[in-house]
Length: 338
Ligand SMILES: Nc1ncnc2c1ncn2[C@@H]1O[C@H](COP(=O)(O)OP(=O)(O)OP(=O)(O)O)[C@@H](O)[C@H]1O
Ligand SMILES: [Mg+2]
Image (spheres, rainbow, N blue to C red):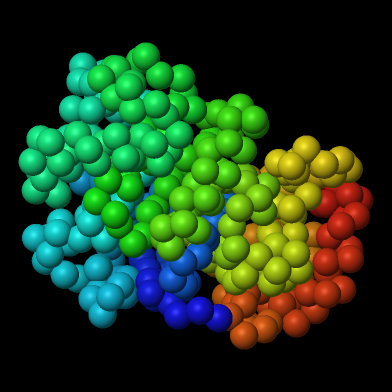
């Protein structure tokens, strides 16, 4: 495995709601190697955005990083002073927020918005910012002649490209993109993902791509971190975690999404039921109520089992995964649970 340059250890993030706490991320650990595209995937509400935001410490007012470490370039991003963290944003780690294409300011031209980052954060002159903006538009495949347009003059796909250009502005080493293609149709999704992959390879970037759609991960990522109900169910290389998944949740996700390449993928089988309420999660394995392979022992906290080097799985039955995979491929396995 290539060198890990971001290492998340036992990360905990909670939201205070009145007198209660929602433990949105409850002990997440994973590594991001240099020059990789990692898909952070899981159902709505499992904590993906919370992890992504914690990594850049752009968290909601009622959120607290209550434990764990985020090790990056020898620093623990969970602990360094805000001033130091602020110096890393855009320059080392750039974040593309969920619905970024709708968050561009409608009253300013795109050139102005790029200029804000390039001049304020990057210390560039007006002329340097102009030149870099043209370069960035070229990189994301938009005619630089359109720099003086307002966001509403672009299509959704183009606005997403502008958001990527903004993230690339100061040449960061790591880009975290939260659901960058979710609101777009499949053809535009593929164009944007292809472009992201091309830029990642050419610039030697590391990318964390947050998505609820495992087919997006299968399409461009080389690694994945699968989250379920605030915990990491499984992580590893694409081969390890998606071709041969070892957590029943990952096996179920694979059956539930169509193939982005448009290949005939047979019948789609949803995972019946809903994830638990994170304000009051059940004890033991959180996937137990929906898992077709659950046993009594799953009522106790599952261990993290390394089914192969660099492929940890949070499941009591991880050692039986080869046999479970065969069962999980059958629609009736999941229907029996309904
Ligand atoms: N500001 C907040 N206050 C209270 N709870 C929150 C807040 N933001 C998120 N949550 C809760 O934290 C959990 C994780 O939310 P998060 O947005 O990280 O999920 P997600 O995996 O990104 O979902 P989606 O795919 O819908 O974007 C959810 O239960 C959500 O309701
Ligand atoms: Mg989200």
